[in-house]
Length: 376
Ligand code: GUN
Image (cartoon, rainbow, N blue to C red):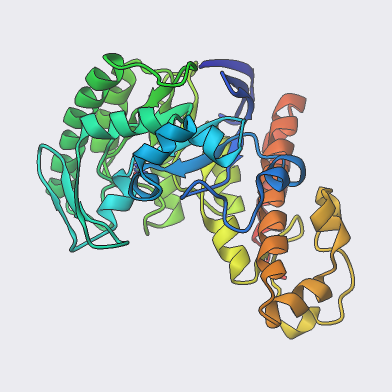
């Protein structure tokens, strides 16, 4: 993997760059649609490519390891061959999913024992086997095994958790460096900054993560219930420390406004379930603001969902028709709403990139944050 910084904004910390992988290039800042179990819910791979214009998608180690399992993924020749997505893929390590199984998991220095949410069977994740699993899944970018610190969290817990994440990272790097990709293309490991909402811990974690000198870095443990201002403060503190010549990935963030604010703080990569999950509940993100399509007011609004962003689905179908599909519980509702929301997120980061390159990002961002946060 190679990252080239194309332009640095001079009124904010925003950057435009290019990440080169063996499965193609990613223009940053970028949003990565979440495909937990090897599929972005309700969206075909062809639609992801041609309508949404996704450049990279996410998969999840926890889910893919449990189902379909490593035998099948290896027999298929890796996740790209299995699901037919030939552009870059990033897998999260399972750190986040395993820890959200409160009550059915035990954390120890060696790793985490957990019970499958599918059949209750017992499994053990360690930094070493999570590297091996991600080698078998075959994503281009793989994530270190970490503990996503819950919020709120006492200082002592946050410090111990961060220190364990750092010890686990050393084990991840040792295993990653002593193993090879299974399918003939290269893989890159991203370490993850933790430290909850404590400035000294975040600083310590960012310095440690930077010192491991990996090809990209991630910021975890945010957007877990803390106020947005706190998330921005922690993000800025960390991006000020992480190296400028490597991509920075803010995990699990966020709303369109969160993404714009964090681009301004120097973040290059984002992922979040919000565009797809909220689509399935009838919430649409548009260039004019947020729509609850179930609302009566849209029942005879025959205007396109969002003509400004282009793309077949957003310009072809009307709000009234989509509302009818949602109210009637038609499967097509989830498809149209998901494709639209993802198209909007990809449009937003592309616009951000163009404004960074044009030199007027900061002014555009402030106007856009207001627009995209409006409830229509
Ligand atoms: N997704 C959102 N936040 C996190 C995090 O802190 N760690 C991991 N592994 N995944 C995440």
